[in-house]
Length: 323
Length: 264
Image (cartoon, rainbow over all chains, first blue to last red):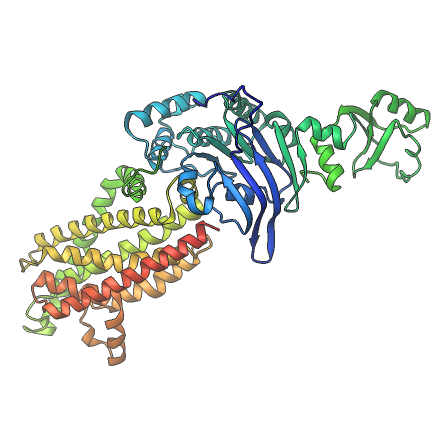
């Protein structure tokens, strides 16, 4: 947490903390990651957005030096994971997808023993553990066993544990999957704090709101490949319209949609039919509603919202992120 | 930079296991005391009275059945301790609790995990065999000045099994079927037929030869020879060599097997 804030001198870009070219991971005949390129700059919050099975976790495991690459090149902190795995891992903080806390030890012991794995001991380890327990608001549970902790509290402890070595780079694989909304918001707030202090975050998620909240820049992954790259705002601007009009049609309205929403261009740029609703991508939702009503379409409900990364993903892949 | 200065990073994994052991050591020591006491009472003295009568004066190389049984049991229970500690807890740390995944995200490597686990298993073997030795002293079966070396022989017997079973555990997919088979069809028959309870000369010829190849027979014979003072130097060396060979083979296999399981 004592990271230096990002260099003010933006004119001379720092070398990337992670640099991947043609990065590939194969398991037998199956290609989990298919020749992807990306760079992560110091101080950046970088996201891999995509559905389950897109190759996000395989990519994270290669960055974390626990999975050898099958092809291409990968440099983490300027080093080669194949040769310098230990040196790289000494500077990483890893939050795995599935909690792997030590359930035979207490909350505080989890941090202390993890510090020992990094050869941090004695007063240093104790001071650091106490600071981190404060940071994730678990100080009052320090002597508790891990078992009775809720999913959200365990996640917070996992994040505290990942920070024990004051990492240069923090890897978070699906950090809030399976948590209730309140626990998610608290975690986001803590991660945002880290980001403000200049930490470099790399995270995977299949929640578009998480990606929008946390990521300065992200890549959209689908079927082992990167299909788009940019800031959340840039991706939305590039691939979808500003607003989306969501219509729910009455359950007995089985008339084919074809025709009913035709000819609305340029007001409506694109129409997407989903099982339970119709999405109209438009620059002006209000105007689109009026035009629909003029045509005599009477939806059960209509909602105008800002376009999101979910819409970007739908546009790029024809599928939704969370099925 | 943190994490790279350690002379032996595997000691951190040992330390972790000892922190956990701190919670349970009383129960663990008590049971490693109670088991030999009960066995030596029931089988050594109870059953032994009958056995001694049947075998006559020269039955067990001049020793009583109790004295014959005790070191054999010490080696046999070392095997059981090693087998237990190398199976369920290892599977838990691979898959059920995922400790290894957490450890491998730090500078620790697969070889460090093995060093730590085997160090801990060595510690458990030493404490259980040590307590067993004290019980033997109390039963008055220790005859030889070499007898304390019997503890080392029992620990070595455990190490002939431990890495092999760790290697096996790393191939298991999270259910206990494989372990149940291991205990039922390997550990239990070895325990019964490797000379702990009766001399293997009682076995049919072919099975005797087979017994000679097993790590437990060699461990039992070595431990018994040292405790009773009947060991022949060359035979003792041969037993030791067999046990070390099994341990070495196990180490190579464990490193490969755990590596494949954890790093892929």
